[in-house]
Length: 181
Image (cartoon, rainbow, N blue to C red; front, side, top):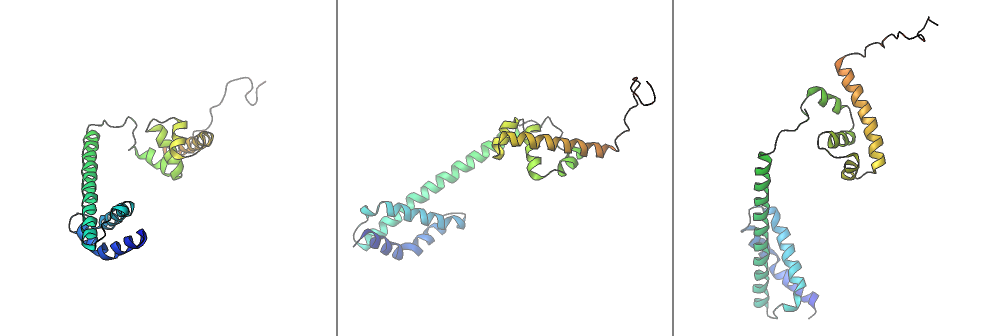
């Protein structure tokens, strides 16, 4: 019998059983199908070691599933430990230097497109250079500089509008003023 036929026979005889095996042993049932798929991937890679008798093949499949389950549990523990460390380090973080919560700044930013908001805040609040912000956004540095220039101009206009109308231009006292020569 070919490797493919042996694998298909193993899958047919153990598929539902392995799914139930994982469902009984993990907290998130959504992960069970992924673990079954991972188990069959390992089984396929090791098809040459598959015992010839059905009982031996079934037991071997469950042994592989046990290894997949142990790897999954280790991964979950590592992710939880990392999340705890990140949570602890964020709790010690200082407040931002930029008044991000200022209503006038938030209102002015809201007038920009989402892309321009992200560009401006990456630079102003997160301290990235325009080149770094371009890289983070997946755009060319030249395009980022142009967008930043235009976004800053719109921000200034929006912030000026929030403060009230523009004052009239000041009269000059130079000799080029209208009416004098």
